[in-house]
Image (cartoon, rainbow, N blue to C red):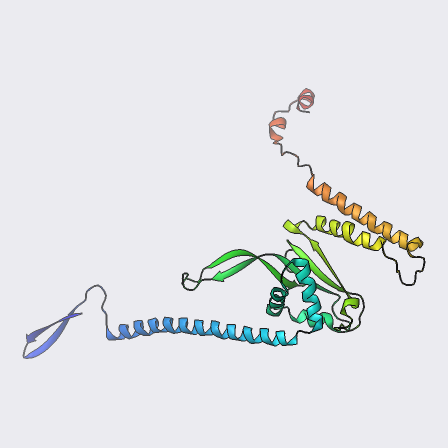
Length: 273
């Protein structure tokens, strides 16, 4: 604001010339706090991230302290099956937000199954230094994580633990009470993965089984033979379904209007046919 003073009747009067938009003291006081607020919000955001990281670290260490022989058994099987180090598997488990499922699996009459997926997962990473607008990058990355099996698409490898009884799982009985298995579903081909798992792993294991509990006849028992026949038949059905899907016939879409628009008499219908 440019002010000019003019003498008029012995008194001084002020005339303001506005250049574009006037900048007053009040408007300056509005601009400055807004800038300060932005800086404060950035500081608070950084502090919040640090606090979250601190809490996550505390949670991980608390979970690490809970690890016992039962967890070590699971970690060892996963590391062998997925070709990761035991340290990598341990870090993954204690960082997983479904860590509590392990305790539910160990509990008496607990969860019947414990599932792990190992597959590409879209990781959203925020680069605060180079992306001040908060935009994210989707980077596919191989990851091991605990799952219920019903919320994530299955596109990689599934490692599973199955309970054989309702007994509490302890470090001394886990090798007898829990079975471990894996099947591969690379590229989401679940039928092929399940077919391979049953035909190449489960059926040979069943047919070589000597102890069938109360059935002393073993493989000579008619009920056991019927059961194995049913499993073989189911695998055959899986194989047929997979082949039908892979070798399906797709009919070419035809514009029939060009054939029927000029039909006038029976001979036209014969020609069109």
